[in-house]
Image 1: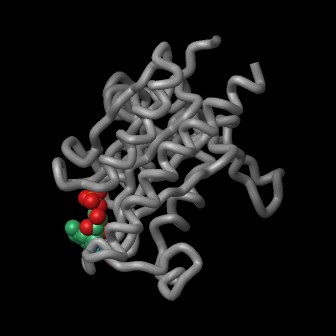
Image 2: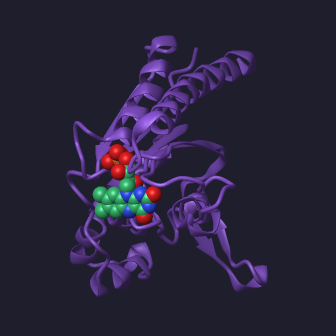
Length: 220
Ligand SMILES: Cc1cc2nc3c(=O)[nH]c(=O)nc-3n(C[C@H](O)[C@H](O)[C@H](O)COP(=O)(O)O)c2cc1C
């Protein structure tokens, strides 16, 4: 059995009380229970948020690699490290709580760091209306989320769900060929609805890990 790599990112600002962290752990633990030989790269951007992009960062990113100064290379070093992690991974698990109907700023900063010309996308106007072409491919993206309100997945607040839309729009930078989203809702309301939603999300996280592992077995 080939060794696979999972990149697991947490972006909740909360620690022990975080539901997205818990769902991510459930997925990864269920995966490792079947495939203990696999590698997990873990990055906690909730605790250590990536820096926002700056004028220097943009100038460095859009300078051809062979023309970059040492200072430019230094400016891009962290971005390179994050992209190296994505390249190595076959499965990317994103812990993504909903903050103000969107992704946490730390996760947006992470996407800003990894959307890089020449590393995760190419740009060519000869391609017409869609000049951006992803460089990476074939990865499975698992988004584990928690929300305070409800109805974001096809329900009454679907139109306010900028979180899943934002992740999906940027997922080509990750080379995601498939996206699986699991979310627990109703956190602000508590009670039975919340308990049921959390339980269903946990069951889905375990089931998804098992089903992805069994597809790997069938493909082997
Ligand atoms: C700063 C902040 C903003 C939030 N904004 C929203 C929101 O726009 N919509 C929503 O449904 N829940 C919102 N919530 C509730 C969180 O999505 C909910 O608490 C979720 O469980 C957080 O994820 P975590 O448990 O992994 O920390 C917000 C919570 C915080 C702390």
